Image (cartoon, rainbow, N blue to C red; front, side, top):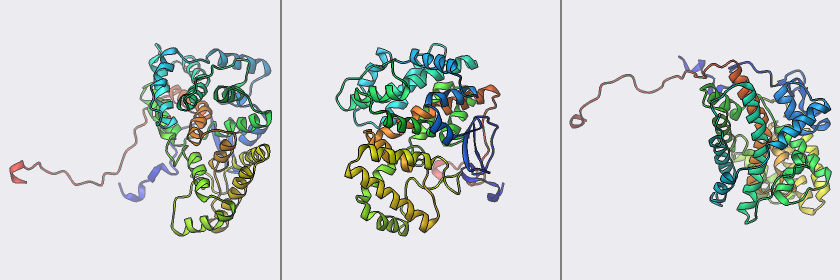
Length: 378
């Protein structure tokens, strides 16, 4: 096989069918089950989007009520898992603790090898309900605070704030967070989703597939980019310094986080909606620091586009928006998981619905076959 036949990084390679999501080239819009994500983010709650991703259609009021009741019934962590989480090293990255906790959920499932669609759907709802509590519990434990139990009178996003901080912020802040959940929920065969499908294709089980996806998402070239963006903003320091910082970074070929995307070439369709939510958070907080980050972000964006014609991706506005909501930077990617569990599990169910083991070929570049020489003759 010649090198010219290789699509490095699987760029441009179509590996399977999917009905979950697509970037529509004629509109440059990411769609979930045919609906533009920007429309879902502005017109629907995240719970409606989760239902859509798993069921193929937006819910009626009755269906949404039943769906939310099913999620609330699955909230809560066992005492065994809470005891294990108390033993996690306080310096461990929250993505590492989340990966381990989700793996532990698999240990507690006695029907783990049942791959029937209804069983997979029930486990998906369970992880969708439990992962926010895992993230919130880890956040509180690493800060020397006791966990807060879920409140079943609250919706998905409100409950997460409650479990983290013991209170629910104004509705405008919750809406910004809820918007980010919808925007992060699904994105076709991205690295973590493809990881999940590869693992699922071996019939290893849904918890193995999700655990592997979490490992993939942790990387700074994938989900970890939202954390890296915030660290980058802190390194830039001030809005006045932003343009010179970007020009220097480009001149020295420094890796700049939050820009560019494998799929989009004329801008990530999710960015305008998330940028609007980021600006809303700046206005809600209203501090000089919040305004500085906004001006810094604008300058970095404008300079990159002017110099390289490369546009920001979703992580660029999402990182500082989460920071202004009060979340610690290492929590950003676990929050991503809270959303993407919907897309991952939809793909796992789709993969197992007509499964073929994913096993690509490779182009060997090592030595030709050769004989082993006795150690005394080497």
